[in-house]
Length: 361
Image 1: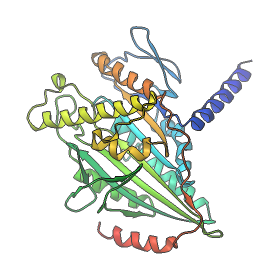
Image 2 (image 1 turned 60 degrees about the vertical axis):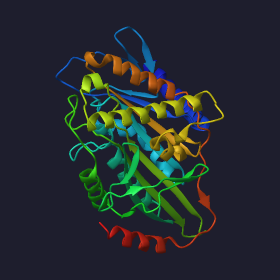
Image 3 (image 1 turned 90 degrees about the horizontal axis):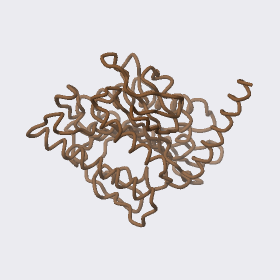
Image 4 (image 1 turned 135 degrees about the vertical axis):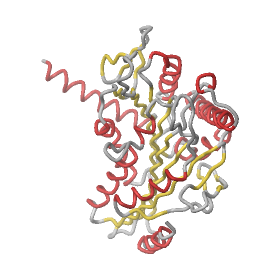
């Protein structure tokens, strides 16, 4: 009976996921940080629910307790990565209070790589398996710091102007680097991290002071038909929301905190407008939401990680983060569109162009 129940539960989950994909719903995962210095104030009745001390339950597409490994977290993310190789735009975001483990989930470390590295490894693996298609992968990385967009793969960390036409955005002058193997990715990640704005606050000694957006463009040309597919994987490690009264930010740190909180508030307004079906979606209220417009405007598949702290002292922020994620679950972006054109210029030329750009490293 137990085996039958588990089989039935798995079948229901697969059907539910298929329905969510058809509707274009944002998949929302909740992850609680592991912290052996404190006892966990949250409970996890099953892999889809989290219970707060006041008895409230929040439901998500997947809940990861503090003991979940990086491998297990990525396993539920993996299916959406395949869509990028098929020509869909895919966006993965991490949201939460500063110090809640977003950067560990997204970037991890050399011993325990996060979603970013694992996603690109999966892209490379899938591309190598498909012998009938020639793939070119290019990477770019920007940070949004004090509501300005900065190219952190350029030598001088150039400030970029964002231009848009409809749901499409352009960043003239953005540095792109060719990706052929994992060494390329590690080199790009290291360069980006060296240039990223990091400062110290009372709450988190390595608190990221900017939103980090890592973009991988995957172009595939079918060797037989000449059809060209283009998918973009956008990996976004959002800066941590924080209460100034707790972080005791002053001067420049206070200005940064205000910019971070304003942009995260704008993201919440966009989700609210999408969820309630408003005619006007306020993408242009901040550079963050403007640059994410292609990912949230109905042309992409999106996944949101909400990261929370187990510490009882942070229950107020935890509750707010969980509510944000719960609201995002009801956002329907519409069915994603596949980006395929029948014929295009030889990708080999594009690959050569990418090599020349990559040489600027």
